[in-house]
Image (cartoon, rainbow, N blue to C red):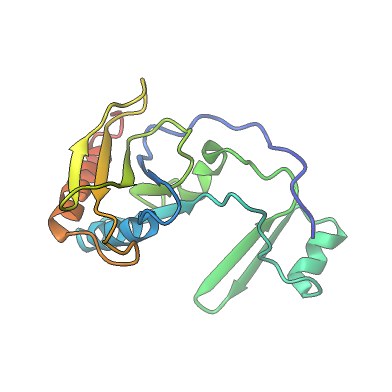
Length: 185
């Protein structure tokens, strides 16, 4: 399996393409929240892209298959196109920073929801498991230049694979819609 040999230089994330981060510890409910936000924003007519930051090595291409053989032979980019779906593999100089992937979404989505990349300044919500009686959405201090920051606290008894209250998801979707309408925020 080929692995990237470094990161190609990247330009900053374009202001015209808003992004909103969902941060939190493992099993806090980040993926559940992203799924609910995608569904809500899509229902409201927005085109949504997502990014999931993996902290472990990826093994997505199958060794011995044609696409893997193309990369193994030296292709830096391999695209597989099938009925209703396509996948691309970057074998060399794959950007490891979020900004390096903005062109993947540019022009095709209204907003990108980012699960992870918590050290990258952006408007975001941090999902926390806390000793609270009910799930609550609160304003949180934001780092300079990161935009709005919120904290979504849920009781430990709420399963992360469950659902967040629809009213809270709707309020978060309102924040994301504001970013879509005013991406300079």
